[in-house]
Length: 560
Image 1 (cartoon, rainbow, N blue to C red):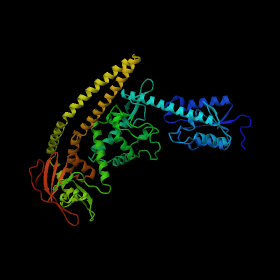
Image 2 (cartoon, rainbow, N blue to C red):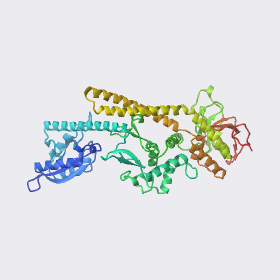
Image 3 (cartoon, helix red, strand yellow):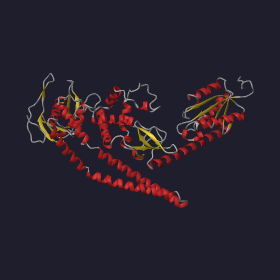
Image 4 (cartoon, rainbow, N blue to C red):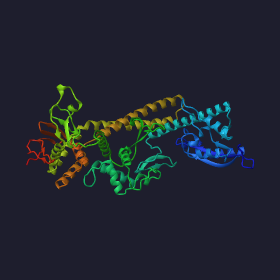
């Protein structure tokens, strides 16, 4: 038999407050406001407060399984308290979704069997009668609906703020801090130069290469930063990635990947990418784009995305072995691509894809396979030949760049037109907002409809603007690219010829290299011209016997 009270006739009460991430924005559900109300209620009812517990936890989890709720529940079970008090019913349990069962009756009856009481500030003591349980459940459902309504209003307000070109309070990425107005509300990102230098370093190594010209992978960037003991984001922002057990200066590849993916660094931040409270992401076209200060240029960011996609495709295609010419080599007999495989003699080969996919017999290609290490050697030897005459290489690259820019002229004209339309639409939105401040009744409803239509038009123009910027930014021959290629060519001439796979692959893709194989010969095409040659041979020991060069009329072949 339980004995209530502490000997002086007063019942002992445990106060329990809970707040979730969304509730924290609602002052009515903040922890201090809940405790203030509960203390007043306990005093009015003559309770002695013996403990106070608070959780930042989901209401979907039963109270006895929450970190602090478990302690409150244990005090009741061990007869250290006679009652538990909360602000509202939904602090104990969250209203269920359709088809789910309520935890509330189970909780009330379970505590009643122990001789304990449940109180809420708004409803008082909860009994086990059907009527009281029904009222309590309706109260909880109503509270849930009120919070959902509040959340929807809040989201609409934030979306309107973002459409007005302002950022919403959030944890800014490495390189930024929040800029606030006189009322303390976040309005824009401000660049933190100490952190921004790290961001620029990450992009430079990944896109253009390090001081030797070697382009680093995401893993390579993380390793280099860790070697140099560069501070990680969590070291700049308290609480950011605080769960990690890594030592200071030790970079995770996921953090590097997130930096490379973040478009805010190129000047565009998005609000509304996540769908509500879930971990799901909505299409970027449905989010609101906000212009923020850029840490890197748009072109560098676009090149990083192209590089990430290429690396991801390569990783998906080849899990065990690397093939330098994957996607760049084709069969000269039938025109289909050639795919890499690892032969029984532990050497790589390329073969026509018709043999891999088993096309019909009349289309079956009987072209012979080619040794991977041999054809890759021949192709890279041709590329090295390009690097022997640096001045000529520079002239040819600049000529190819002018041709590429000329092809993009229509898109640049369209971008200029879209920017003008966006400017006009934003000016119209400002004028409409000023008019709506004094409009009333039916006129206000009409202006609100015009505002919705105008916002939809601005969103569509912003999406088209972003697409055009992306397409124009995905150029192969930028000034930085040309300087990188020529710089690498100088190193090759100086004897630095042992480039790794990623460096070789990057230059092959940048130069637009395409290789065709037929009857023991190869044809190599790129943005600088074309060349033909005979495939070298290999001895049993693996030594490659270089085939004699055949002079041709291509614009860049250097004959002995």
